[in-house]
Figure (cartoon, rainbow, N blue to C red):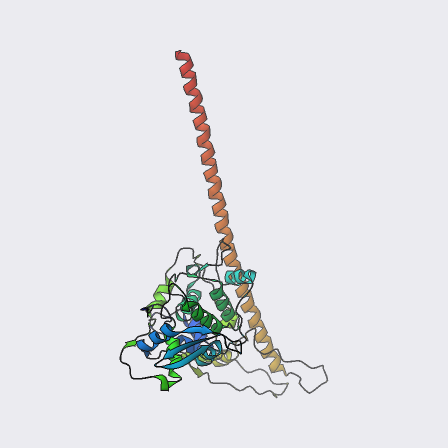
Length: 386
């Protein structure tokens, strides 16, 4: 059997702690810490080298009668089966109804809203073109969940689709991405020990397969140095800091450590307050609790017609509703403002490029005319000498 290698930057363990140097990244840390992919990003089992090697040296793909492709491998003389469904179950991804692809036009449109500026129509995108928080998100997905083992500064349309789905509160089918990559690795010329963390998680669900092993592989883990790396400006970055989408902001709770959550103390608001009462003075804690709802939150309460007591809103409730709607409008206006900044920056770069080309053309034409004049003068001097 061929000797296969681990890749030290593949299937890494995500770093989701608000530690030293994490200022400016707390929003994206909160987002990932409360997302459905958190377990797959952070679970770090003890990895036994022999088991991972046995899996990839004996693995083969087949399609049984049910029509669902699966990978079978022999571990310590016993057969282990991995399918897309088992990946979904063991990694707690809950993405059976997830999206796998998006139209190219939507991919370019959404990436532009994230601050991506490029004149190319290529479906290979550059991670360095994004501002720090977006760059952190892409970097984490590439190293922790994608099948890549090289070319970390680039990502393809499938990873772009995953990022867009996460940002717009849609479910991406990571289980399918992982399984199809494993199938492709079986016959690849550059076959390696892919997804060691995930395979060990699968095997740990069946402890009867495991025998005592001493040789272990330590899964590579990000550290707090990641934050300083994400702040470094890369070639192609417009230096416009594009904020995260409203759908990505974690509201109504504080996130502590590596994703554990501590609910904020709630402030009960009576729904049957007398209509003549004035709204109480708002406190900072009240403002925290009643943050502007995200687009996917529950709809606005229905207001019944005048004269109907059932379902009618009190003066206080109307005041709260007005405040929430005003906050949402202000938030949308800020998003529009940031988007305009991105496009203005791209337009400015294009204008400067055109002016530079015009200047180059003028210089070239001036040199050509000078050459013609010099040639005529030389011809006159030759005639007079004759």
